[in-house]
Image 1 (cartoon, rainbow, N blue to C red):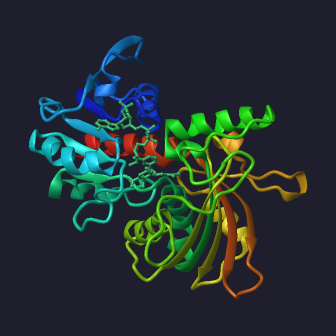
Image 2 (image 1 turned 45 degrees about the vertical axis):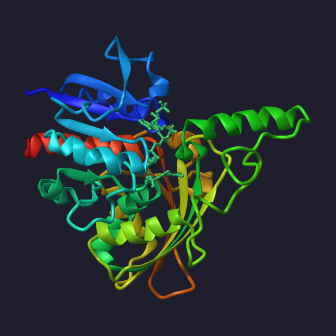
Length: 338
Ligand code: NAP
Ligand code: 3JN
């Protein structure tokens, strides 16, 4: 099998770290792996397939000879460097929001809209959705195919790792400080996150929704290729290290029973149903962490409307929500197009 030169942009970050692990775990055909981060990380080394690889500072020449670029160093870095990478002949799979809503740039979840990968030819860029959107659409798509979704009401419970490595450190530090009767150090979030829930993820927009909430609205419509689906979201940061959880209320055009929904979801790609209320079995963040699948449970009819289903969806935000989804896209790209 042909091997590819792969550049990981943001290699030292929470998503980048996971990206390197997943490339190794899935035996991605890597010829050369280039690890790119800021000047701050020059001198660091990271392990890949038993070898220590030096981290290089990202610059205009970084993409010479590279074929696939996996970007997770923030939107402004992608805006500047993705066109430089594509000019050098490198296909970019971008984990940031920089190009997600750009017409002509595909926004892909392999279990949902793998055929859209072909549109990478337009600009040489494929966008990876936001983590909260990815796990939601993995669960929505099989229901949409059978019963046509009219409206989605989602509340998220998002792990601190979604904010990056500094937030993971901040939650650990605050827990230690509070258990030692000290004032918590608050730097990353607007409030203490330990032993708390913060109903704000990212900045507030002019409609008083947060940017994270509006990402879920726009991205869901684009991925499901259906602007008629109404989506409303409330996104909440919770003191969990890994895995986002979501409570999702779905209104459909056609009636489906809870048992039908269970059957549909049990057969859906990338989904594992855990749903046994009598034994208190349902998806939990602590068990989804480190796994590839999206876990769905608490499947029940919404008794307040004629055609409604409630579900609880949990997935590892750094894996399926970011790095794994990007590597799955890369796998289809090399199998079908490169
Ligand atoms: P993180 O842990 O803070 O890591 C940030 C990474 O970006 C580090 O490797 C950092 O390098 C690098 N970086 C920062 N400034 C840079 C610069 N000027 N030049 C080159 N590299 C630079 O954050 P993260 O959680 O991994 O997230 C990174 C980005 O991925 C986010 O901003 C977001 O756009 C995206 N993301 C997407 C999802 C998703 O839902 N798909 C989820 C989380 C994050 P140093 O270590 O050298 O500073
Ligand atoms: O907060 C989370 O749980 C997910 C965070 C994602 C994120 C964080 C900073 C910038 C994004 C994203 O992927 O949408 C971005 C961004 O690229 O805008």
